[in-house]
Length: 142
Image (cartoon, rainbow, N blue to C red; front, side):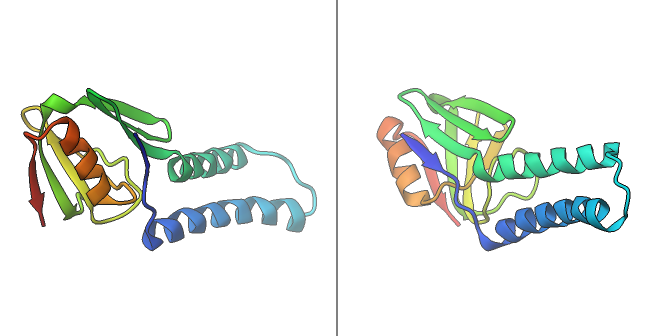
């Protein structure tokens, strides 16, 4: 089952704000400086804008019979369901691996000390589906 990532207002303003700012810089250079020459900073600004949009639109999660797969732009990975020890609902993790686009998501603890932060559209549906496949996971509500 696939789950899209929830996008909160802070993340939307951040992504759209930077994209408009970067494209605005290029636009000003093209139309208001007279003679335009393509330079490396324009390429860098376009690449950063593309990465931000890829992160925004390309963040999703998939639960299979044995794995939790996550993708966030160029970052992706998988976690074996039997390695998941605990899921903390409604808390935001501010450091570490965060393929997420919203606050108040899920912190998934797996392995011995590993954890990842995700933000599916509905935390409850995601947790219910993962518990169907592995009911040994401890659920903590924050």
